[in-house]
Length: 209
Image 1 (cartoon, helix red, strand yellow):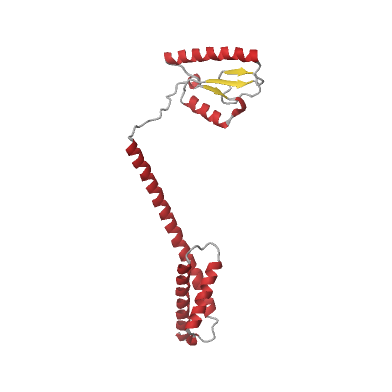
Image 2 (cartoon, rainbow, N blue to C red; image 1 turned 90 degrees about the vertical axis):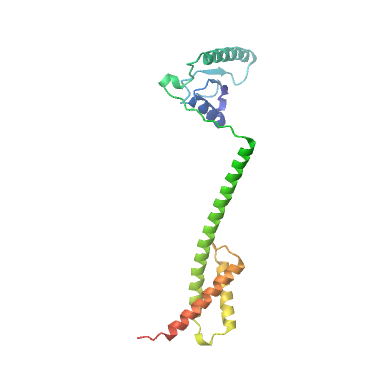
């Protein structure tokens, strides 16, 4: 592979790094305006002028052609190293490959998609449960505050209860960070109001010392 590092394009440098990591034959070229990178400076670079002057480019093409021929010949003999071999003996990592039929590949991808959907559903369910628990606590606190302000808890009417439910439901709707349907919000508000009224009645019946 011929790798032109002129301009130090990040993608090119990544590909060069992978090539060197697996100790694969590579020829590095660069223009005369690009500086050497610290990590790859010890490796031979073939240079060419950025202004691409004709005669110089002709000479560069001859050098590159010769370099490619020599590199291919050396790599075919075995024992050739571009980079790692100059620093010691290393066992180069290999990428394991596994062949699968198209049907198995599609089934594997579908299974991955199902797993992702299942994880998303679990996450949303957990977030919904946490949100509803927070809403119930807020609703009960808000309902209790307004119920305690009633002059006579025993004279509360159905209309009064409905007004309190609407009041608590509206409060939950205005608060941020609580996402739920209007029906779920009203159910939570109704439960909170009824619980707050029962608590107030029990408190009235409880004798004080």
